[in-house]
Image (cartoon, rainbow, N blue to C red; front, top):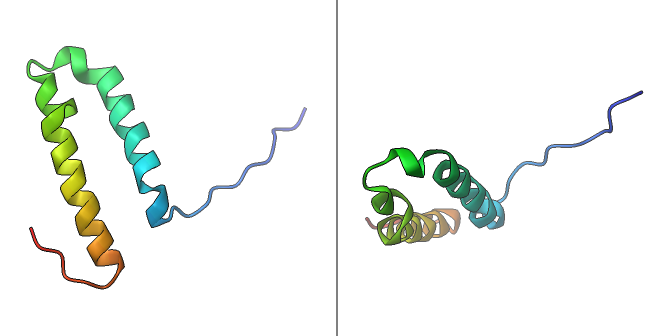
Length: 68
């Protein structure tokens, strides 16, 4: 029996939200119960950090200087 073939595509900027969602959900599922302040890592503060990163990546992608 042969294994099915597959390809690995190079991620694009528009793939970032889906990749980030998988990353965060897998960490939350694996580690949230171990963290005393899991809301900091997976709640509103984390979403604000993600928004800032996303805006910075968009500015960088379009050749603009990002502001912190």
